[in-house]
Length: 154
Image (cartoon, rainbow, N blue to C red; front, side, top):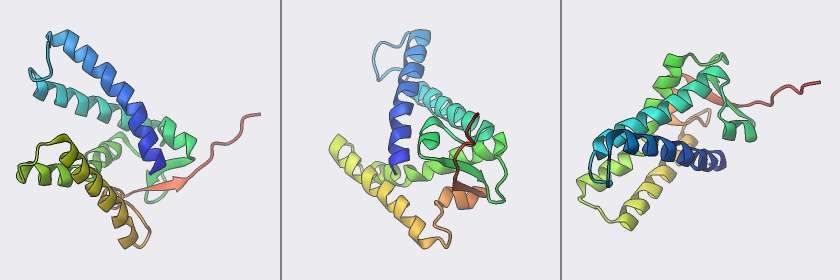
């Protein structure tokens, strides 16, 4: 979970930069105009960031810090297609909770945050039900997180 939070901090910068470029390119003056386009750009930029790192080295910077690497179930590096699949399916961390808030007509920031936090914690706890303690998206995509330290350079 610590790596997950560190990833969120780094992605904040990526999302901010992408949002700035989008706003300048489209002439967006406030958050309620063009927000669907902004969401699509953010989804694509985050996906490109994660797919790039997962398919090239198997690690983002936070994953390097915590000595975690994503590989296939057989231990091979991820292809860009498998990395993209993992990215899309990993939205299971958030979508059930967000859908619950939406369909329950809950729009207050604190209430949505509590529902989202409960959803993320529930998703993380689901690993306890898997025999290999894997996240659901890893089990679905045939990927796994492994402990991995880069070889030391001499």
